[in-house]
Amino acid sequence: MKSISSQFRIPEIAGADASPAAKIQCVYHGWQYGEQCEMCELERERAERSMFAKCESMGLAPRYHCIRFDDYRTELPGQAKAVEAARKFIAGDYHVLVLRGSDRSEGYGTGKTMLSAIILYERLIESGSAGIYSTADRLIAELKDSIEAKSGETQRIKDRYIKVGLLVIDELLADPMSGWAGKQISDIIAERIDYGRQTIIASNRDAKKIAGALHPRTMDRLQACSVGVVFDWPSERGAA
Ligand SMILES: [Zn+2]
Image 1 (cartoon, rainbow, N blue to C red):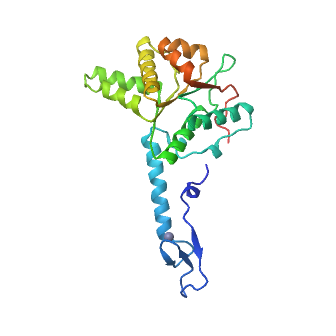
Image 2 (image 1 turned 90 degrees about the vertical axis):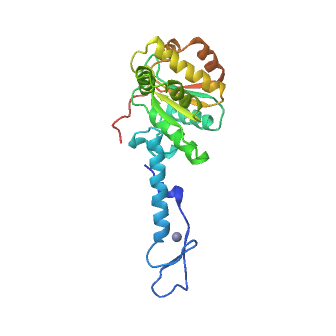
Image 3 (image 1 turned 30 degrees about the horizontal axis):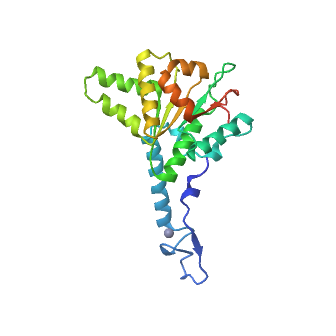
């Protein structure tokens, strides 16, 4: 992982006429006794903690916090294509980015979650707006729980997923999905497109299986405004 410090670097200038004990002059905090400005160091640490906390609150697991394109391997042509599509998605070329497996190979451990996390973080740095990362199962379980608890919160939960700036729905069809679950996910994706919100859908399944699980109305919209990337190279999970 690339050090986060490069993102928050604050210039420090060595001075020729420093007072006897001071070694460096910080452009923000004046003469400092030591190798680096302690105030800048504190500010950098605070910024770093805040970015990690934001990644946590977006729903990302710690291994996916604050990762950038530099952390993503692009040795294979498919990986380079995936990055190209991701950059175009960030630039706003598509409403929906579909990261999927193929009928030849289901794309386990090929970096779909990692690429999704990179896009969430890029968006966070660029615009300061946090998105939501969820697996399809987690999202469905949240809706189901609220219905069973008769909490009256179901629509509010759905609206949160519909209106957030960037939503990642990972591991779609990791388990077989009921018709009801497929409809909930389809509604959320379709409404997000109507609201002009961007969505990433990641699944190890192929295009046919994904199409079979989603509502035809949603598939129509998807065809008009999405780009699909096939992740069919061998798993890199566990690789350095
Ligand atoms: Zn300083």
